Amino acid sequence: MKPDLTSNRRTFLRSSSALIGLPFLESFGFRRFASAATPITPPKRLAFLGMGFGVTRDSWFPDLKTTGTDYELTPGLSPLARHKDDITVIQNLSNQFNNEAHWGSTFWLTGANRYAEPGQSFHNSISVDQVAAETLGKETRFSSIQLGYRGGDNSGHGPGLSLSWNRQGKPVAALNTPVAAFHRLFSDDSTPLAERQAALLQQRSVLDTVLEDAKSTQKGLSKTDTDKLDEYFQSIREIETRLSKEEEWLDVPKLKPSQPLKEPGEGLEGVEEMKVMYDLILAAMEVDASRVFSYRQPLDTMIRSMGSTITAHNMSHYSDGPRKDVSEQRDAKQSELFAHFIDRMKGIQEADGSSLFDNTTLTLGTNINSIHYLNNCPTLVTGGGSGIKHGRHLVMKDPKSPLCNLWLSLLNGSGIEAESHGDSTGIIEELFV
Image 1 (tube, rainbow, N blue to C red):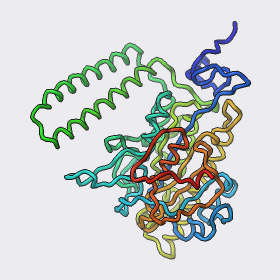
Image 2: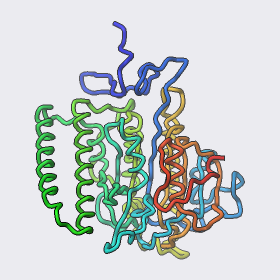
Image 3: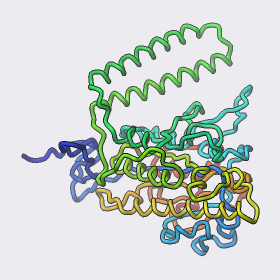
Image 4: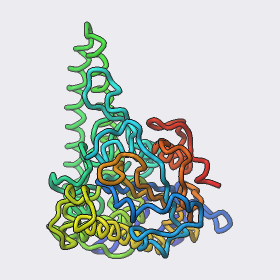
């Protein structure tokens, strides 16, 4: 029997014990048949990795005087030496409204003015990953994946449930353990299909009742209350969208990556936890479970797993001595883990012969510079998904250039139409020439 060449992205191989995701074959394509003469184009992907507290300023940032390709990797970036031609270090980017020295993530991807709405002491806006998810997430089981870590330790991230914020500026929850992420991404629900369908129907029924009750209160409201109610309705619409996506994928088994992926052990922390989270991101990219990822990384547990008893906050107030030593060790370990992540991405081949790395954009960074300074956010970008010309150290002429100019550049470079983001003033042209 001839194979069905019209199968869509959900094609899988079934065995007696598992469903193994096929690689993106030219014969199947994403939405159409692609011949050998016209190979399909792999999807664009974006991943944002947030470090929380900053870096060691004099051993992470390259010398401001050596720009372009003529720069030396610092000790903090030296583990990335084998990928130097494929990374871009950018300086002089910052969020002008960022005024919290302990918030390395809250406004990192949004660039929001926390006092933008009168009468509110805190207000955020949509994060760049969620803007991307509105476009890139249409064809995948999960519009986006948010990863985090458990516990309320002070790793320098600030308020929020992840790096991500929705269009109303509300926090988006994360999967906070490797075990939770593994099961969410790759484990099928053993509940009978009819029961899952009934549960979704019940949720819709409750949602309809709540919506009707809310609509009945609209008359006679003040402008402030009307605005609040509109925000509420938008939240309801988001829930409806999520339920619709769940219904669409309800009877589709989750794909498994080509390389066996074991269920993570309980209680992983620090460096080992980060390694597994990176592996889960790669596996999810390979089976096209999602194309947009964010990871709010641990720091306190990372430092402890490296053998130090200094807390992340105390380390961030370093001066010469043990605290600075730990800070520099942290920088090197971050770069080492990131370099291994890049290795793995380069080793996963797409249908057209390119690699996963060639079609993905990764950003590693944070709002906090160093010792709680909020200028010149540490920023490292890699991957070929946005068309950036890598292998360079770029220093923006304006020392207060909006970090959101980078986010706008990555969106546009990934094929996502956006005129602005946060406080952006335009794309960074230097990235592409």
